[in-house]
Image: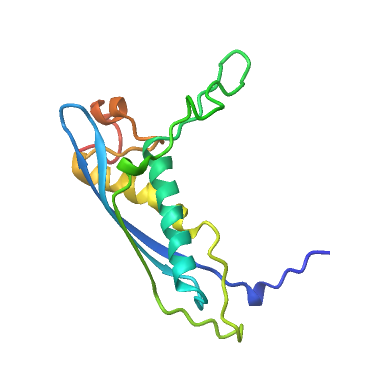
Length: 162
């Protein structure tokens, strides 16, 4: 039996902001700063909660710029199924990351708890893609944001072409 109580659902919210630089000759995207503000209900352990959302933001950065599953077109199998060929963010890729919490009172729950889950990851890749758009004038709709995709000319028929 599913314990579904729509009147007692609790949500978490976030806003993530990214500052990037894009090298116009190589297409290299570097994230300079990330800032995340989170409304997650009552925070019991601020150090643990902050570490969790910062870790999620680093996961989002890795998703935006590095992680790509490559499949064999013939078999459909993943060809980069180990860390030798699957790139993730390293220490040098991680910028100044800030996270803070907005007071968020849950009147329906006396304890005021919400789960943090993956709320740090959710908006980070989109924030980085939007920052690249602001820097280049070209939307990046496919992740990861690779050098060749940044250097491609904008599609003149696209609704947001510069």
